[in-house]
Image 1: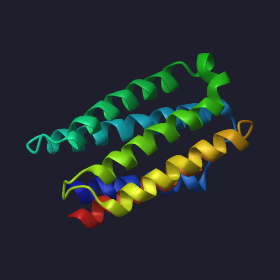
Image 2 (image 1 turned 120 degrees about the vertical axis):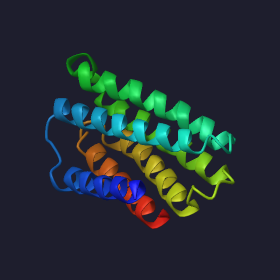
Image 3 (image 1 turned 90 degrees about the vertical axis):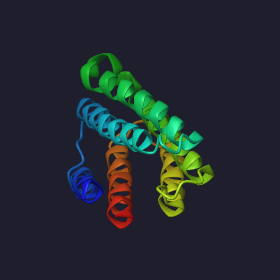
Length: 160
């Protein structure tokens, strides 16, 4: 039941990010920060819930969750200080998604879908590619995060 609720919330947030992308780097920083906070919290809880297995994926999920939460707070509370890093946000988010996708693929846990891990990995690669080509157009990060939230939401709903 919790997975379905989290999945529905994730899909709704993903649609909001995709349908209403913001046009300023400050708002994109806020969106990225909140997305990283939600992603970090959910990733940490997922790793914590799988700690009974105490496999590598659960530990990496907890660490990635903590790192995502830290970066999320930085982007939310230090908007002006990080506005010059809008292009770097693609790299940070892309790197986090790639690591999360790779560890999902390497995990032997039945809680981790290979399909969603592959999609998150692909979205991470796309985020890195967009960082190279679209540093002056940071709005794409909101769309990418929206897609990833929808993918994770569907994965959570189907895992129940």
